Length: 252
Ligand code: 1GP
Image (cartoon, rainbow, N blue to C red):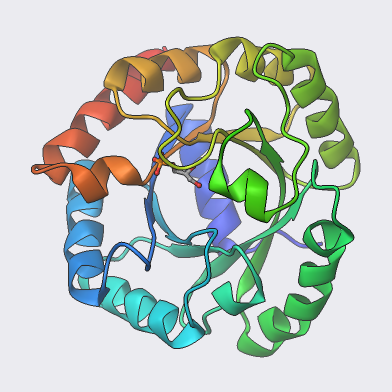
């Protein structure tokens, strides 16, 4: 499958900067006006893109409104991060076309994707193939997605799932600790994936401190995603700025 403009943009920013930051906005937590504010702040603070989605259901019209509001306040590409088929908005630029690689339910491996694919085509949204791997036992996404989560102390298991994703043609792998996870993905796990695979590595879930962002980038992460951090910070702009500047330190 051909690489589209949003993926090309992500790849070149990763190439130039070593690692980038993406802000995740969950329409369940942020109504359109707030989402628009957050996206503007994220852009000013140095985020490279905005992801929109979450693992619990929100009707598509609510996602449409959030995406439209973001597009009005920011020039950053909007990439959907769907928890289900209802997460597809025609107003977005791209979609993580993702499979939950360690799900035990074929629906989350290929069923939802088959239902969503014709809509992605009809709306002309750019699909970016991504393997999604849930780590650690207690996340909402792991529960909803019938995952058999990778134990945090088994980095080699994350690495072989990621390698399988790469061989299936996925150009990104996302190591997910779960939104509001008490601890981010262990850097040793990122390192194990980095050693075995050449895909771009996305990490997310529970990243609150600039220290953890830097550590994850040093271990080999190319994209650091934060959601809760901006939703809960009083000064979201400074919070992102701090993370972005430490990501650039980590890549040196
Ligand atoms: C969740 O990885 C994302 O899918 C972001 O998690 O909300 O903990 O930043 P946080």
